[in-house]
Image (tube, rainbow, N blue to C red; front, side, top):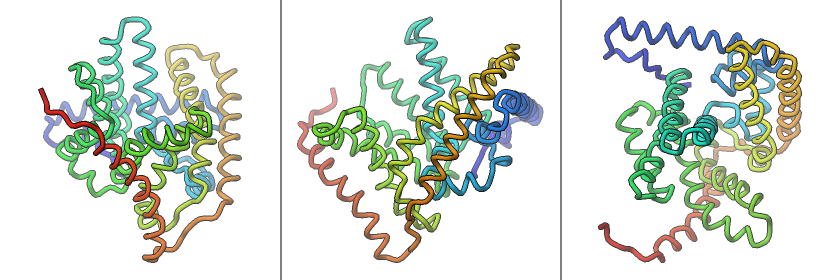
Length: 321
């Protein structure tokens, strides 16, 4: 699990680096203690979802997430940071306008990445959010795949060591698949099923198809239930994460009675997540690393790429002003 805390940068003066590490350590300790108070028996999974601390997580639960193809929901990733930025941006936007909301949301994202460590998925999400907001502010909105390409180049320049991380590859491959497939597949699937279902279904299929070869070669297994399991467990995990973080924050500022509501809520949600992971972990998994299996799991990605490229090249091309 690669992490790079800002306070660990050897280029910073020793006193500044020491102060940053002390602040970061104190903040993590206070948040962890608050989570244990407000989440009860669900504290280990809430810690994993909010701070990336998996030391106290039940190994059996981790194994169930892995076998069900939903381990990405448990590990800190761009999804978690995206939720934080979206919530902060919405809340501030309602009070102070969109301009200030963008700045505050990005600042909150930076603070969170510094706090939990600059993991590849979090850095990608933060840089992508910056690119997206900047393009809108400059009145030059761009498609997601173009923003992702610019994010990739900036990410590699800032954190070249992330190139060796499997999480880096999975983070970009999944979003490349989503950015290419969902706009096309969403319209096609939406003709037969509701759009509210078509979008997450298409995104799940795209992310799974594009990351399958890397997942199979890196972890030695590929869960067949990943798409459906993610659609079912994803909302539960997000609610547990947001409610856990909100309860801990309220506890820190003095609302200690929040525990009367937060503990049973967190424990109930954690129980649902555990049961769901247990059910989906019983689905078959691919374990072979033979060339034939690699070819078979790569075909869906290639099949989704062809119609997307055809649509891109059919669009009229205009020069830059």
